[in-house]
Amino acid sequence: MTIDLGECPLGVFAFSKGGEMIGYQLFPKDSKEIADRLYLIKNDKPTEEHYQLLKELYEEGHREFSMASEELASQLREDFDDVEFEIHVPSKGNLILRSSLREFSDRFDFENLNGLLRDAILLVTRKDLRREASRRDKIVIEAIEMLDELDKSINTLYSRIREWYGIHFPELERYISEYPQYFKLVSELGARENFTESVLEEKGLSTEDAKKIAKAASNSIGTDFDDMDVEALKKVVKRVEKLYEARNSVEEYNDGLMSQIAPNIRAVVGSSIGARLISLAGGLKKLARKPASTIQVLGAEKALFRALHRKGKPPKHGVIFQYPDVKGLPRKQRGKAARALANKIAVAARVDVMSGRFVGDDLKEELEDRMSTIKSQAGFEKQ
Image 1 (cartoon, helix red, strand yellow):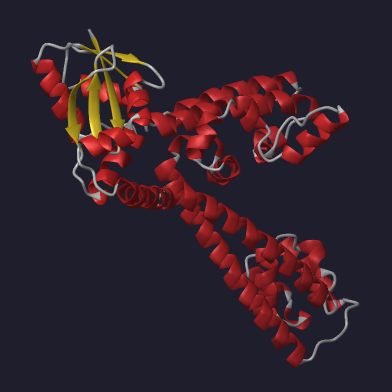
Image 2 (cartoon, rainbow, N blue to C red):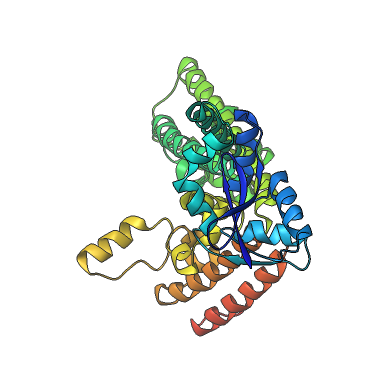
């Protein structure tokens, strides 16, 4: 005979096929104790009452049971080798308990059931919130979003500084395209008169670049700045340099987080793109549940919506376009490259969530082989 097992806020119960209760283990009549057990059940983990009831039934000769949770059943099997579990959702035991909860509470003297349930549910909710807040992938999401905000701010400030300093030395931006170096030269040298060939070489520029910039400085068409103008600008630039240092610190921190929680994704696609994918998916587990076709277009939702609305061509890629081997290919080949990359990211995410094994190097090698094939088809030479 198969015994139907069910759980409710009162305890764990066993019923015959005819619906007759043949065994039970009650939870303590305390909201905190009830909450602890409901939290375990919610997360597919057996309570001590499960083990106690199953032991009693086992000793009576029962070996066949049914319940609603496969995960919970698999853990119970570990302690009871020769038992069999059927999975039914919802289980017959749970249906009986739901329809007769008030009757059972009166029978087993659970006074003030409503108050107990209210307090227990509040405690379970708090546990859920604490667990959600402690998820490391949430920190990754915040870190990558902070990095994006810092990049936006730095780019905006760089544009303003370039316009401001361009009044004095407009030619400099022709030769210095990267803002860290631009900031360094402006904050350390100030007035264009200080941009001499020897000083520029000391700052790490090549002899050829130093000559060009020094010549441009001596022949500049910019307006003269007095000491007050230069000092005001230098103070601003130094503050922005500090912001850039903070941005680099966040990037390093994010890389460390990714090596902890998603080492396989990090190995395949890098920390930055990997973290953005986790952010767009809403978490690492949610990313692992998504098919490769969805991962491929994460970040291109607006373009996808436009394509569906106007019956146009859907986008071939989202944020994974930032991956060098996708971005560097001709337009016709990017779709293949994006699919190959998305497939490996999907595998990496599932391994990171399910097993924790490190297979990132193998996935990366397989991806590079596939990318080499796509490049050769596109007329690129193998690197």
